[in-house]
Every structure is written in structure tokens, then in C-alpha cells.
Figure 1 (cartoon, rainbow, N blue to C red):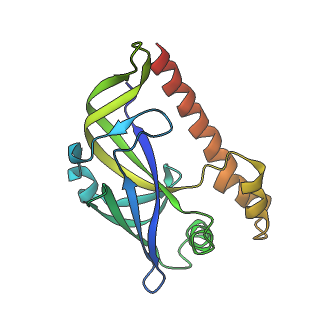
Figure 2 (spheres, rainbow, N blue to C red):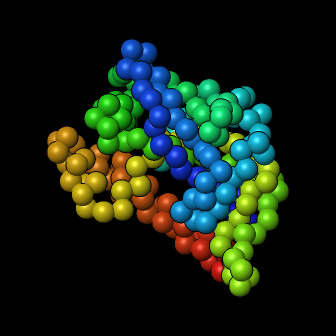
Amino acid sequence: MPDIHSQSAYLTKASKNDDTYTFLASSEKTDSYGDIVVQEGISLKRFKKNPIILYQHNHHSPIGTGKAYLGDKGLMVDIKLAPPGITPIVDTVRGLMEAGILKAVSIGFSALEWEPIRDKENNFLGYKFLKSLLHEISIVSIPANDEALAIAKSFNLSNQHIDDLFIRDNLNINKNRLRLLKLKQG
């Protein structure tokens, strides 16, 4: 099993008055990898000590802080972005969120206890993470098509900014997906 896993979810409401955004960060719905994260099994202990919000799971791109808690639908997070002008990446992320382009988050966690999920023919489908330790929450885009880049270009971002925001991180995410697929097939 890899040390760090991720699961994505989406924006539920936004308050522009204080730069606080509320997300459903995780639920028990099967994700795109075929995995399920049991919500009651998520430990928030580590996250509460350092409630960091990253951009694209990049540890070099902290963009704010968050308050994570279990709600009726799953793991919720109230994200407070760093003040405007702190870094260009925070300003860009804020603008893309306000424009409705960035509206997803992903949790980064360690699996503490898990079991395989199999179909009736015993084919491996994914993992059910029974217990996990939340490390961080990231605002993510993961644009898998040219339309997402076209939207970013409509904001008159430099090519370097687009590379920083989308391409480089997408390549790292794809490497991690390949690693997960190899582990799941093995």
C-alpha cells in the first residue's frame, strides 16, 4: 500500500465575505479509483495540529488553513484562504474559485486499516479504508482535457502560470495514479 492516498469531493457553499469556503471533503461514495473511505474511521488528530490547505497536494504550495469536522454527509472542511497579495498562487486560486472553475478538494491521508473490495467474481475493484489518518486537504483542478486549459487561458494567465497550476501537478498526479494501478493489479 502507498503511504499517502487521496479522495476528491466538491464545493458545497462559498462565503466571499471572509474568504471561507465550505466543502464536502470526503464521503463514503466509491471514488474514481474504486475506493471507499469510511468516514467514521478518519482520524483528524494530525490535521488539527497543522490544519494546512494545499494546492494540488503540492507541499510547496500552501494556500490557507482549514477546520475539518464530520458532518451528516461525511468529512467537511471550512477553508480560509491566505490574505490577498501573499503569493500569486493564492490570488490565482482565489480568482479561479470565485469564477467557479476550481470547485473540488481532495484529502491526503495515510491508510491505517483497509480491506480489498471485490466483485462477485472476486475481481479486485479497490480498497475500503476502514481507518485513516488525515494529513492535508488540497484544492484541486486535475483538468484532464484541453477545455480546462482553455478556461485558464481566458484569464490571461502566463504560460508559466498555467504550467504551475495545471500541467506539472497533473503529471505528478498521473504518476501517482499509475503507481496505484500497478499496486491494485499486483
